[in-house]
Length: 180
Image (cartoon, rainbow, N blue to C red; front, side, top):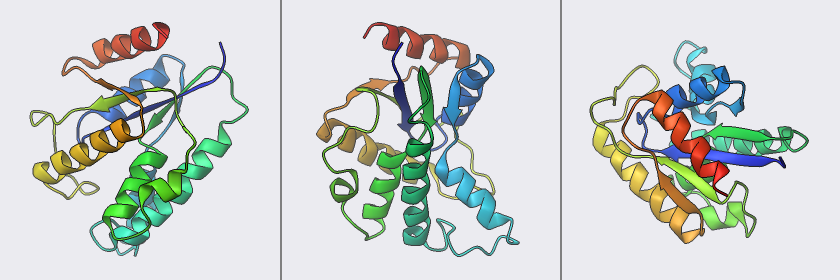
């Protein structure tokens, strides 16, 4: 099998990280979400980091673009499937939303991920705010809508993840990838 970089994105609090954890348990290579890693680093500074999304969304987004770009570069020689919990598209959209460069300027014409992208829909029953996710559910829905629109504009095939168990979501993703 040649390399396939698989993006799992969508609604904040939609179960993406849990899904990536399960894929990792099954032996797949996974790349954790840049945003969560940035927040963890910033919170380690006694919660007063400058690049927290609720403090300075633009600084946060710039770091996410840089981290997601580095993540892509770090797996270029890896064979097989590589699953990303969010990625460069999300970071570029966040940067544009914060008043920075347009996401198309950051992404260019290159398709950075496999043609099928898996999109976690808004799922109020599992959405939770926590120390690293301070925004409300409506903000997560708005983010989902921006991501979905961009993926369609970028000509990715959007596969909406079913609202079901984590194991069934894993099976769904593997079947969709095998169908290509």
